[in-house]
Amino acid sequence: MSRVAAIFTGGTISMRVDANLGGNVPALDGAAIVAATPGLEGIAEIEVVDLGRTPASHFTFDQLFEIAAAIRTAAASPSIDGIVVIQGTDVLEETAFFWDLVVDVGKPIVVTGAMRSASDAAYDGPANLRDAVRVAVTPAFADQGVVTCLAGAVHAADDVTKTHASALDAFQSLNDGVLAAVDGSVIRILRRRGSRRRVAASRAAAAVRLVVAGVAMDGAVIDALESIGVDGLVVEATGAGNTSAGVLEAARRLVDRGVPVVLATRCPAGAAGTDYAFPGGGATWVRAGALLPGHLTGPKARIALALGLGAGLDRPALAALLAGQQGAA
Image (cartoon, rainbow, N blue to C red; front, side, top):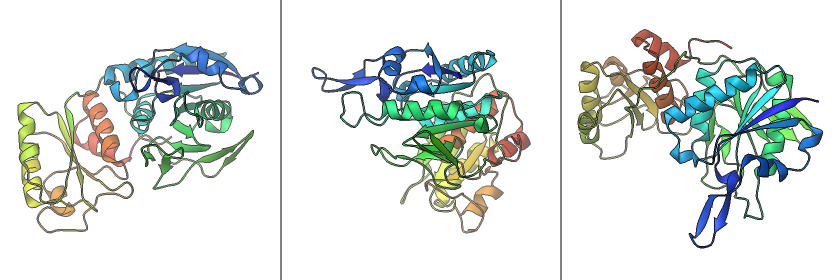
């Protein structure tokens, strides 16, 4: 029988309501969640790797590298056929992309979690874990990089986005669509993943900032970044990459000082580009030296920039990494 390493890190899937505190708190370890998941024994043997019960919103880059190391260790074992990482869903789209960038192994890696706690009648943790284990033992996913699996849908790490704060089907791939659907014991593969970004990084730049542009916004927030330190900046612009002229001018001052600036869109799908040439339009950002990240969202562009800077990439290599023009799978 296949064998899967289940790396538990915490999150809603591990939580129960604490009546005294008035909300969900960490309560279950990995073994307890496996025990609460019927049907696993018919899919694979589970090797539990318990890394604690950390709310996903508390993760640091150092912790993400530690989990990446646990993934590599599990994948190096000849007895392990696939890896499932179980975590909170708050930043799951970012962490999955982080590991997609830095982990390069020949076995399926699936990230999952839950939108409901174990105290909820609609607790989705066991179903998501069972589906994720099924994906992890499917050889077709061995060359697909890191994927996520929740609510019966398998998504590529670079496209998946959490689109709703609490819906069971919150995770969607808004640009390229889902990779596969899990229906009981059947996995329907809908498309194959294209090229992947990769970076050989063992550290991440800590001070990569993310700013969201809005109406009537000037460059004051960007100018203030100098006081707290800034290694790089990602701006989530409106629409196809547009901001006020003031936001652009503040970012230009960073570019002139050698700070890499990335222009993404705050829209959940699509990409910033050079269609508009008025002051603050996307074309003027690119002329000022901003880099474009393809369809990456602002949070994912921040992950890529932080890892690229941590790896010591120069500007052309950073541009290629962000644009997805290197590292074909």
